[in-house]
Length: 179
Image 1 (cartoon, rainbow, N blue to C red):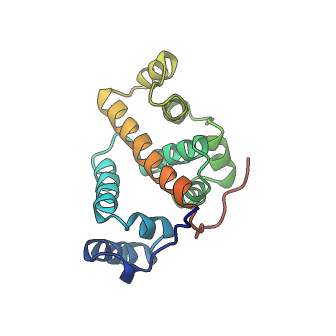
Image 2: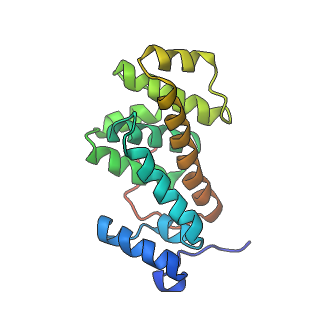
C-alpha cells in the first residue's frame, strides 16, 4: 500500500504554501495534518475558512467547540485529532479529566452535556442524531442556527478525522490519554 508522507511546504503548490505560511505565523508551526491537507490547496483553504467562519458569530464558545471536536474525534477514533484537540481544549480551560469525560460523552454542565450528546449522536449515526438528543439540545436553549452550526462542526471535524484515517501521518502533538 502507498505510504502518504507529510510534505515539506516547498513540495506543495503556491496556494498551499501561502496558506501554510499564514498558519505558521499564527500557530508557530505547521501541523502535520494541515501540511498533508495542503496536497490540495482547495481543501486546505475550505477547511480553514470553514473553521474561521464557524468561530465568528458562533452559537458556541471556543471551549464548547473544542468539546465538539473531542467527542467527534473520539467517535471516529482519530488519534491525531484527539491529541491536537486535547491540547487545545486544555488551552481553553478544560482539565485533563474533563477532556476525558467529554470524550466519553459526558459533562456535569447540563448545557455542555446537551451539546456533547448531540455531536456524539450525529457522529455515531451518520448524521441522524435522533429525537432525544435533538430535544435535549433545544430544551437547553439552542435554536436552529445552533443546530446547523453544530452539524457543520461535526462535518468539519469528521473531514480531518478521515484525512488522518487515510494517511496515518505522524502525530506531532502530545498523545491524548487512552480511554
